[in-house]
Amino acid sequence: MAVACGVTAALAALPLALGACGDDDSATSADAKPVTLAITTSDAGAQKFRTAAPSSIEGGLVKLVFKNAGQDPHEAQLVRIDGGHSAQEALKAFAAEDGPIPEWLHFSGGAGTTGPGRSVTTSLLLTPGSYAMLDNADFMGPPNSSRGAIATFEVTKGSDGELPDDSTAQITATENEQGTPDYGFEAEGLKVGPNRLRFENKGDELHHVVLFPIVADKTLKDVERALASDRPSGPPPVDFSKSASTAAIDGESAQVTDLVLRAPGRYALVCFISDPDGKGKPHFQRGMIKEVMVR
Image 1: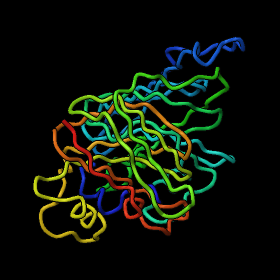
Image 2: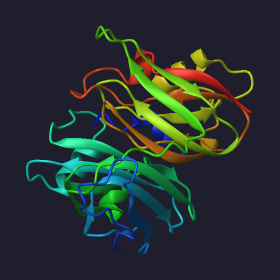
Image 3: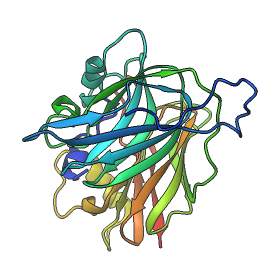
């Protein structure tokens, strides 16, 4: 699928709700309390996983708490599935490196690649519908979701809400208003260590962001060339082991999520997703690659 990071990513080591919004129509967006969506992925034998999640939560403002209780990297990509399609159909589309993104599949955010023993908290807005949590963090083999790291749940109508204003950094994905292939990122406030990141997609297309530390003497052009190559030669221009990422979100949406940057210096912000028909270039080859300094 256009969401898969392909050869580049292959190089990288890339309960019930605890609270609920009431049905009181008099509640304002500012008053709405988030529903907690607790999801945990753990080991279930050799290269097998299990994921625990509630069967249903109220929608609106949701606080996803994703815990990786296993020994491998995992992610929690939330997708809304329309039209009676199944989670397995969504997984098949999600895991394909080429091919279109079905119109019935909507990317709702979540937790990016999360290391063993770590937790990520993400604030997001979920509309009613059928959802799945998918995990494609292991690009070296079959998707983790095909080995048990998958969950389904329903989201029912809840109170309206707004994303919290507790972010300490922001990355915005942009697209040229005239429809030309000029995509880009705007970023501010990133620092070494924990970041509370507001990731906002102001475009129409699906986007995510992966952050790679750039190796000392390499340039952003070196990074772009290596990422675009099917067979990059020489040492990689980025430190894949210290990468960080967000989940993907549809156009005109946002989320506030935990993001840990483990080294100071120059970083490349990259979007690997391509257009919905799956035929276009990855977005980083259309301008969605940016160098930022992290201190």
